Image (cartoon, rainbow, N blue to C red; front, side, top):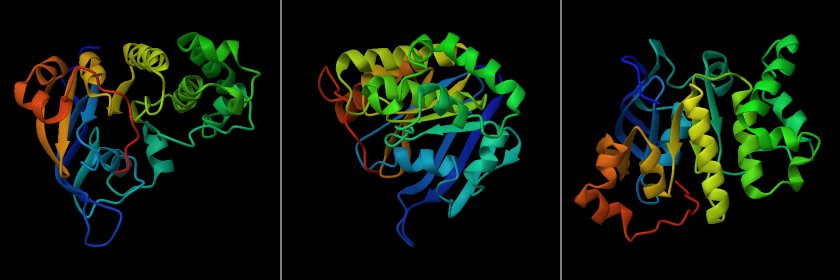
Length: 251
């Protein structure tokens, strides 16, 4: 989806990490326009997942600022950010395996008025038809790709402005990766702004409006998805061969 003129999310000079005096992020800058799909790529340990967690309030920035629209959100807890219109899907442990698909979706609407939950669930089924077909099935019996779709659907139940996806293709087969990426594109085309953290860099850049390449906790390159994909320096340093297989990231 083509972005409008306004910046929805702005990260400026952010430093953050998991241990005192050990910053993974070292002055990261990021801008996301309303309606965009922006991907974060880079080598393992570059800070991609750390940045996603810091934006969503799972980590507190030690320096720098984060704004959602005109509101400062750096360091605010995740439940407040959900109310402000942000959702986050972690790489693992992102569904309730003992609950059905429908029950998982209801958990995503815990801050919504009960009267609107059924309507919103119907909208999710229309956007992600597979979930409607599996609505009575327990999440623990779904395939890896189906669980990722359910995790995205549950996040969408809160009707977010911004959806942060952390390595949605990790450990999936190539066929399932294609299915998950197709659903990500559909979600973005439905009007949801997306920040996509990905190890499958080529595939992510092909469908991204813009991308950021992180290295050692800093934003080293930025540009449109196609321009980064065809940049010789980015290709030599980060894209490697002709195929990028998805793999988990521990940063």
